[in-house]
Image (cartoon, rainbow, N blue to C red; front, side, top):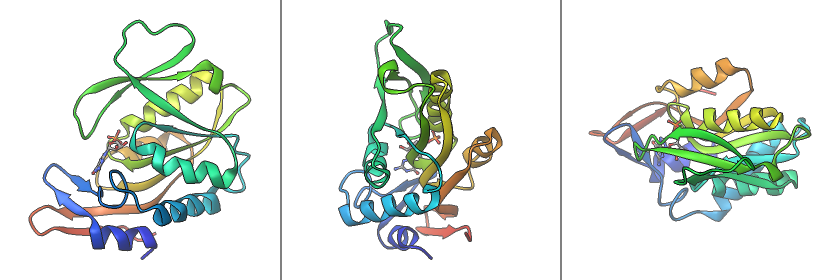
Length: 193
Ligand code: 5GP
């Protein structure tokens, strides 16, 4: 069992609706030492790729993506959620349905910050149905950038996203892959890596 799986067992909470709460260490209060370890773990997995930018989505993706970008010593770009219907031509736009909030957001990245010269590592905290990642991949593709890989802190392997995204072709690595969780018993089991 790796450091993140151990921490999930210690401090993660299983909520009804297939939601794993990790807000005491990952996406509300953040354990900075853990974040640094996550950064190094993704660096080890993707260090042979010519990464020029790390791409994520606000808000909780930023905390995971920051230490990764630090390790690669490249800029971090995050897609912003936008309510505006009048998005001008200077933006790449994708539509993303939120798994946790059940709403639909347009997410935008300025054309200034992503181009065909970029080799992108996409990072996010969770993978559930894959909507957030599909949005980020489509933004990278619109920019003509190369998606070199995708790094996810916690994949919920019992949901469809992992299969959908892997079928698109980019290498996807998750640090913890949850096979099953039970809100009544409070149990989490991981897929063997
Ligand atoms: P997807 O787009 O893959 O359906 O969901 C991914 C997004 O939903 C992530 O960016 C994350 O913010 C949120 N998310 C999905 N599942 C969970 C979960 O079990 N717990 C938490 N805290 N967030 C989740």
